[in-house]
Length: 208
Image (tube, rainbow, N blue to C red; front, side):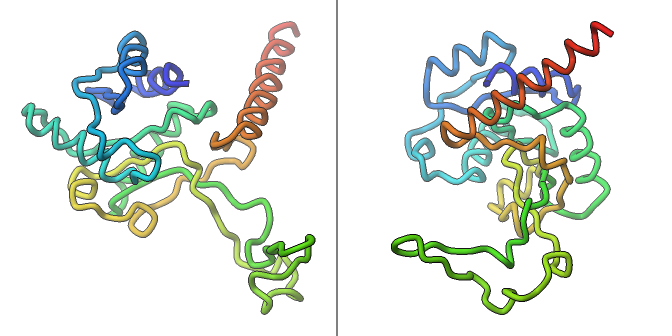
């Protein structure tokens, strides 16, 4: 997964430096093997399961500044996104520079209307999160989008200032089928199924 993310970054042709921020020496070693740099190990206070993304990237940026690197834009790429494509990185980068936003990142449309979302109580009892929309037709509701969890382009100043990504960004719309954010085992199984289906389709086309 890490190797794939690094290779997509390389293939995009956008980066002068590709860094993997990690506190794990094994991950660092794998990252170097596939073409990334690991000039530091991330400190413990930025390495627990509750650490937000922005401080981690700000730490890496501060390191780069201390080394005298010259750059204006920084992209955080998550390793758990097996359907990331180089063109996505290029398109989001172009969108960032065509706007005044601080960040640019991929989003996808929710498969169902969030205004009609249900909550489940004891014994499976259901209730509406937004009762005022219970009788509204789904086609009459405003579309909603979710963070694809793949990458974030941001201006150096935005990362360092700690600006919130979701409230100061623009979205690159991706097709729903190509967004699998791997957080748990069933996400991995879904990704495997989709990957095998796509690769099988390529094999069939090559035999035509």
